[in-house]
Length: 494
Image (cartoon, rainbow, N blue to C red):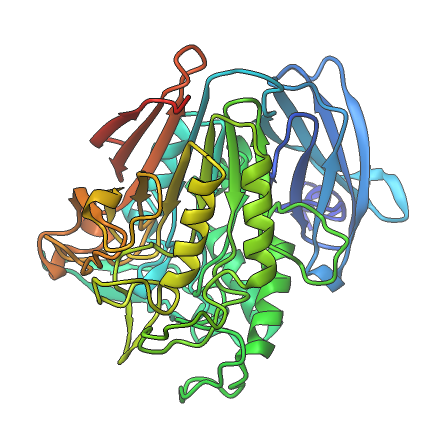
């Protein structure tokens, strides 16, 4: 064996970061850093205020073992507010800290403690409908467009994986060319086992754009249906021949474990692995991450006259009301994974909130009406909804003057996505329910179904910028290249 090859084998005996690094759930004083090892390893995170790492604080993390699929997180505390933080993850042999692999570097900016400019991006829906990673076409290139904007954080509104979606080797295109996917065993069938759910997250991490983005932009992650299976709700029994495990509750438990293992979510002590939470960004912004899946009632026609659970569930709805009322932030962004007034069918049933009846609130609309009237009654201002799910981008203005239900203050809802998936067809991919008086101020989808995919560029993300001096919020809807499609400035409510 040549000496160079032998030296390479010696080096390979040290643990290595296998899938890049990520940070998330950043506050003014703390952050979560994530990594995955190529073998069992002890995780260390070295933190510095400068890119040169001249001054370093070393934080010891946990052992990354097979029980978590070699993933792990380290919580960094005592960070300075509103500052750039540089970090590098070092993995060592669990029994010998001197046997360490090469460091992998990342960065993030902590939340401000007071008033500061804030800019974040949001989107949803990655790797859907068989549109996976085609390296010859730039892979998940929307992440490079987002990285260049250098936002304070990225809010994922869900469907970061398509656990129920198979990635084929090829997909023919309307122009006669072929989209050629990277394929893996876990993406060659629907996910049922914990290993298969984990493999769906590892698939996305094969993309260079995605890994580079993760290293530079901290995340706030929610989930939607495709992290488990299409249009799921608790207690559902699947009627789908692709699945041998028909109990959605079993699938959801495995999916939830993989979600927390593979994303830089806050480490929580409760047994539920709770997803709903609030992330605070100084005096100007609170982000309320809503879980519209874990407590959802069954999909029906949506015409019930009394609420039997809705999309929040009693406990989460009460939490949301209390947190909104306690918030002192100028802007309160509700990070939802389902739109309010877009009709999303599930066969003969309704998958989202609106059911297409433009009269008084029915079904899940009753829960939304309760929340909106509570906000009005307690004079909670600055509420803006952002969401994904429907695979196009839009701006909706809600006003009681147009509504059947009128006990609420006007507000905006912005929709964006997909990141890399099939796209709805213009002019209106989803019907609008008029119960809460929505106006479609802007909408952009694909002109025809045959070009409604990432090969032809119809992919979208949104940007929110809050000015420290005026406290105004500017929302921009952007395409796959970062080009601005629509802009609106919202004045603060005093």
